[in-house]
Length: 157
Image (cartoon, rainbow, N blue to C red; front, side, top):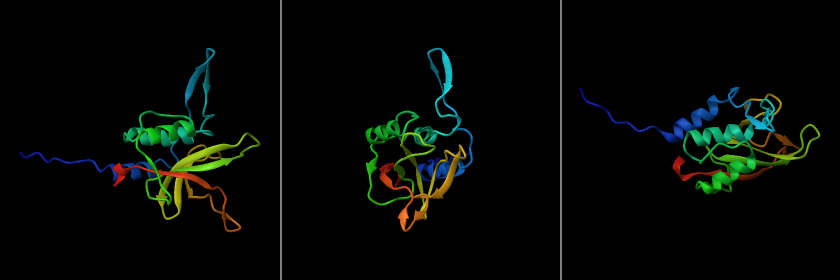
């Protein structure tokens, strides 16, 4: 009996995982202990964009560890060989400018570009990853939410 040798397709599996994560509740909660009290720091999915993106990237060995903050993911991207790019590219990680939600302090957002002006990121409203326009639509011909930076890794060729 002959044995076939095969290599997993990083690019195909990575993009498929991003698309299949839409609606997944897996990323809703991250519990930590603060002064002896267990707290869900992602507020049951409302603040889960960082853990969603880092979980996918870490699973495919494209970053070094999981993170719950956008800044933590960005620092790991840069330390792991991700380069900033000027134009959106399928499989890219997108970082959106800070915006205010629910009257709180402005916060940045992170997700993935999947092509055809579409992105997947965690929805604060729905508390799960959702597919949406890569700038969350347009308002008077301007992006509703500006992409402040995009990252891409050469391993995804």
